[in-house]
Amino acid sequence: MLLVEEVRMRPKCWVAGWMLMVLGLIACGPVVAGNVRIEKKTEVLKSEAFGGRKAVIHTPVFHGIKDPALLKRIQESIDAGVREATESSPEEWVNEWKAEGGGWLTDIDYRVTYDDRDLLSLVYVIGGLGAYPDETEICIVLDMKTGRRLAAKDLFKSQEELAAKVERMRAAEVEKTLQEHRAHLKDMELTEELLTAIMEPAVQSRFGVENLDTFRIDDKGVTFVYDFEFPHVSEALEPSGEYFLSYEELRPYINPEGPLARLIT
Image (cartoon, rainbow, N blue to C red; front, side, top):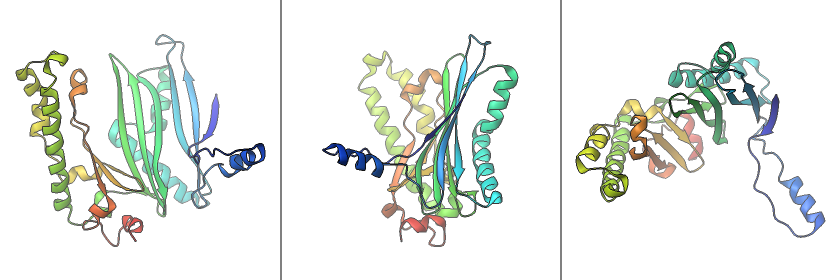
């Protein structure tokens, strides 16, 4: 079964009177960025195997892009980003599920965090169920002029200095998280020794230039995302690994010739 729904809607308008309500609903229709419109296609896969498991698949459909080569590059960039993180593209995940009549996958979804000035920021979520539920988030930022997926080198200069700045934020968050956990050892039924052992990988981790490529953008700034890779049994203790810097804070690092400069001029 295929369903199609709009991804982005303007906030509801609360107005008095029947006529004003009608006008308000008209005014609150789908948002179209430039000539490109994104629709969310939803496909529900069902299987009689694996206990009647189903998978819900959400994918973006782009309307208004007249150049088929550009549209192809956009899709290839999305596929490459998801494949890099999960070893399969969204289409490959679906094909594998269908071929096996079910499997680990339970959902594919995405959200748009920014869509303006020829930049598109998507966060994909691939979820599944094995011995326990698990999911992976993938950040994909595209230059809609070229269809390319953007990396840190496309956006920032002085990357070593920027990485050092984010590293200080990482270290501060880890220390704050550790202190918060220590204040609730009894509630979590943990000893100091066990907490120290669990948090040691986070304490010893480092945010480097290579980690700058995992980011999302919105209208206020950039969030760099770091995965501490805690095992499932201790994920509840894992720091967030999300470090936000406003465009004003990033101004010294933004390449004036790069795509991100569009957002600060």
